[in-house]
Image 1: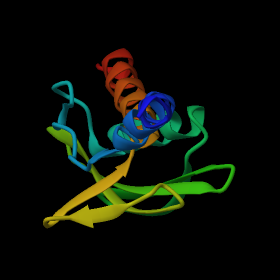
Image 2: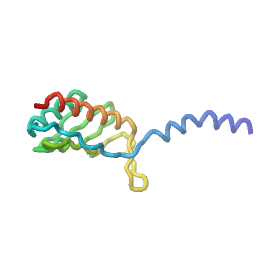
Image 3: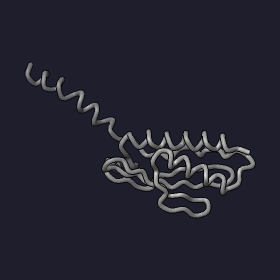
Image 4: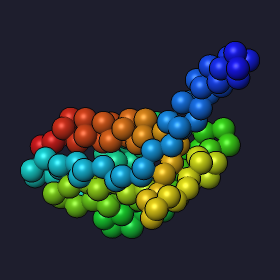
Length: 132
């Protein structure tokens, strides 16, 4: 009995870590674009913010940028839709980030949210700095 309790106490911290390894994928709220900014200026700001964090622009069309972050064996791709009012970031796909679907909800490794928050903050800051 004592042995089984001791085993449980040793294994419990690892189980807790595994439980928190993934979080539900939720796209962030739109980032407001300062009044008076033209779409090409918004695009330039987004591309600069992405490059500053090591994201690579895979494709670009008016109002839309697709970018990928490669870290070791992990990749994540985002779609960034923008206009003169707002910038919207949406998760597209990933590899080696423990993506799974549970009860219709997609989950991903928690590090994704740190990378996402960094790029969100950088875009918001750069938009404010570039405001006319």
